Length: 220
Image (cartoon, rainbow, N blue to C red; front, side):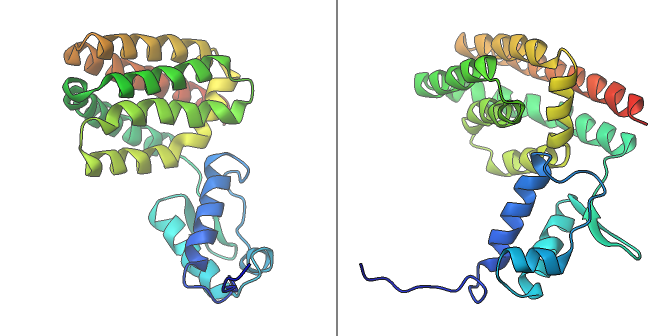
């Protein structure tokens, strides 16, 4: 087998590889609020220098997942009640508009794919699967809108709160409730009722916001 080997320590994409790995760990809750990101330790884990690690941390800071703290360096950013409210208020405005635009363009293939994600969500046993399948369900429906900028902004907003939503789903009755709300949204999409799908999406996000507020308040 002939191929040209590449040392990741010298590869131009090293920062991106590290960024994606750290982002995944933060979103999935392997790294918790306030956990430090020690550059030397990360560099050793990826067999690289600190330069791409710093670049990766800068990218995480730009997404609001990491913040710099005096005397401690970079740490996983905590989610305040005020920030959570702002993110959810934003999603309540944006996501109903996206699904309203998407419904008239949804194909049977899109609807079948979304139903498959919904069925997997209902059957999932691993808490880490809930967040992934929740996002897959919504992103599958939103993709039909052909509004890539809007969708990218929604994805960035979800990155910021995803690990908290996963915990909220597990610690409350959120899984069953979310499953029923997803089913109602999908049913509206299947009959082509864009307005109902938009209203149900708004309610779905708003209810998740209330539940997360209660969880954050109780954890103080």
